Length: 435
Ligand code: PLP
Image 1 (cartoon, protein in one colour):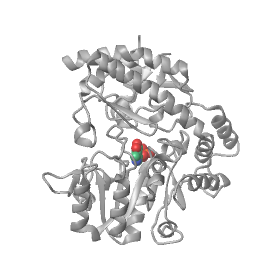
Image 2 (image 1 turned 180 degrees about the horizontal axis):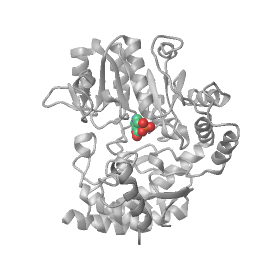
Image 3 (image 1 turned 60 degrees about the horizontal axis):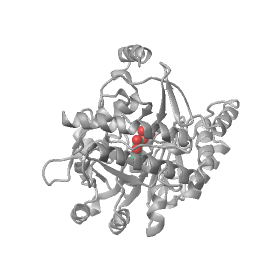
């Protein structure tokens, strides 16, 4: 299998772009080798510039719930394109999309932005503006985009004070951030007992997907919401990944609706953009009323609510019926069961973890409940597994810490390709973990 064109493009890209990519994980650094440059995609499959076809289990990192180039999404986008690409003035489709989001989730008002990072950054500013407080609480291993204050790691020892997670973030940007271990109720309770009156908000992934997928314990999000409520802090549920993906109503639909709590603010992205740059934050009407131009908290965007992105997102959400989630669940179960069997047969330690339709395969014995557990993975075994899958026509996330995403376009044929590849990849993982 040659990859001459991908290699040539990667060399050109590396000369003009840091690491040859526009978002780091695409560079294959965690698994080695040359990233595949994609030429086109349709349904469950992508074709690279050398003509190799892959069943795609990345789905653009979550957005492609309906598969690539869904005919109805494409038609709606083409229709919108014919009317221009951006006006910087309000449009009907933005209202439709906002109504769709408000209709499916507990948010009362929503504002559209262009990326998940923008959504979480804006939600935190709004929470600080609304409460008049400064401290932000997050969990280790939860990713909320590359917002300075959230690119924070836990400090040393028992302290909850955060330190910058990357050069370029000044200590002052994370000085007001507190980082706690996921699922640690005692740590949450202690922090709020200590400085609850300073906490503007606690932000959590509704179900973590960025340290691999971890389902919150039943009642954990409820506990967080109630703790915030008792202390006058806002609870921000980040559903950029889980929203309209974990279930029709996101992770909130799986636990919040049952447990009877609602977040003060929520953030969305990925699926609601239908493969275009669109995201949103929303929540309680009294909190959202603090936003400019109604209130004093400034937030804006040249391309916010872009009509093409809003059209793709709206069409995707309208097509995302219960049948879609049933299909994604069934196809995902087939892949999960086969991965479990192949890895068990090969004697590779692993744990499969799911939240709604999202899942990931951790290359470690379980249980995986927080970031420390996730970091016990055998990443060398995953790298070998990844490359063997790629060689057998399956495109997995090029990192052991990511979710595997299916779509309504993953038909029997696509699932069969994955099932055929798995035993080969499990054997490769076993060899790598021995070495
Ligand atoms: N929040 C979560 C939970 C995410 O998974 C991501 C991206 O993966 C973000 C926020 C940031 O979104 P974006 O990459 O669109 O800035």
